Length: 325
Image 1: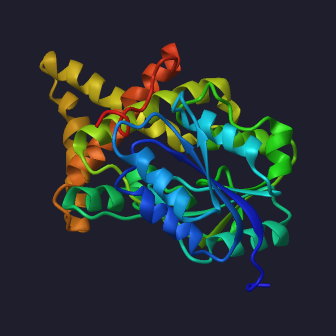
Image 2: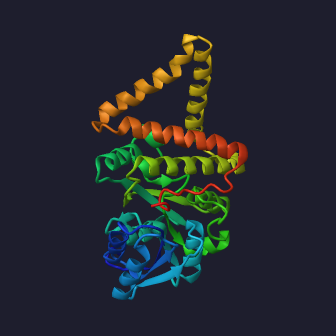
């Protein structure tokens, strides 16, 4: 079965991805599949859209869909509506699936009877800072140990990274929720599971992911993600993993400790000193100098965002780390 090229529609939301788009497209077109690659083009401010047009002219499998609002969920839904095939595979423009990702992913979908299958986000970096961010992504101390970050045994999953879908399930649940800016994958997986369908994780499926490469972009990304996680937690508390509450608990403990220290209570320094000791120890273990800064940025930006999102909601919060260039 490995030599059978499945008919699939690969859909890729694209915004300000001039430096990654060509490699992402190449990784799809050289995979073992037949079908189409739909690029949902947002209003990029770099050279992304001219590059996409050039790539489409060079390969008839590529189709372009305009996404003037620029939101990922909107672009995905536009592409899904135009998809010709029964299998839908999401690939982001800053990621590159392994050569067997598509063909093996469809096999696993059929073998398990799942409606959604996901694999491992294999974070990678080029600069020292980006390598540190990638290391933090794959560390249980960095993002909480979800299987799609750190790997694990195949089995039923809470959510899925990117996703290999049956088009029929996407039509049944109404596609992506366009009111959501971050956390759309988690929300979609919960609605699929609510229909009694299976969401499956497979460590065989690897996708190289290129994370943010600057500190300011990392702050923007994790603050926005935290805000939306707070909003989604408030919407669906019963399905929320306990690990999501660790960063906001950290932020609150540091805040309480700071207040106590202002009143001269030395015990107030314990949360800060304890956290700094752990972060520095993990940094020494990683052998990457920026890791302590990266971890603190991820934890605190996400935690502050979560509290704000849970209290006031996420309306108007957009991740501009790939928008403002």
